[in-house]
Length: 267
Image 1: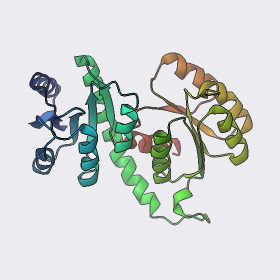
Image 2: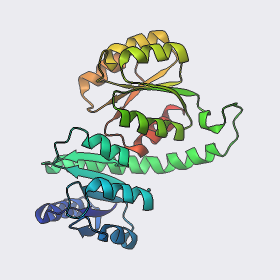
Image 3: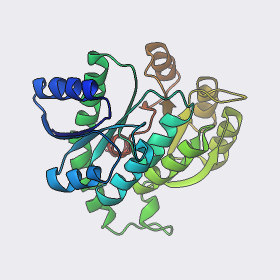
């Protein structure tokens, strides 16, 4: 992969460049601040992936990420930060980040996260292409092509996550009929709408996703329940699977990953 590094710490820039090069990637450029040079290097080098720091002189990483999405949405961004802001991961996902990692991180951690972004990129490109082809085919549904795969419900206590998921699911051909912020409302929504897909956050107030899952499966047995979690903890995955979950999506949300996952779900 062709990688652009945007990081103000010189030592970390050099370390990342060395790690990526040793793994077979091409580091096409390095930028030390949030100046307009970032956009200039994007235009000049045409990277596949950008490793982007949050706290930069000039502009912060979120502002730059939004600019990248506007001028080159095909680029995947691995967002890096030492910030302890509680909502920074969600803000990065909302702005279009494909990956997220907190500093300080080890070499294994950053290479693992980069590997996830690379793997997602490989699968997402053909999936998105096929998705576009299918979108051109008229579907016999009164609600039009946007709901060619049926309906969906989103249950997550984060407003930004609900918003991002809604846009992604609609891009995947699902009509989002309701969004809720807790497990109790998720069970009710499943019973009322009988959706094809229900995206269910693990950690929510009143009733969490794992507690709500068997109730949702009982209320709407044909619904594919996709867990949304900030950690692929083996216990969480095992419990969810035992209660009938169809799979899981990791936060922060990677748009390409969600699209590719939904495409596989409907094959």
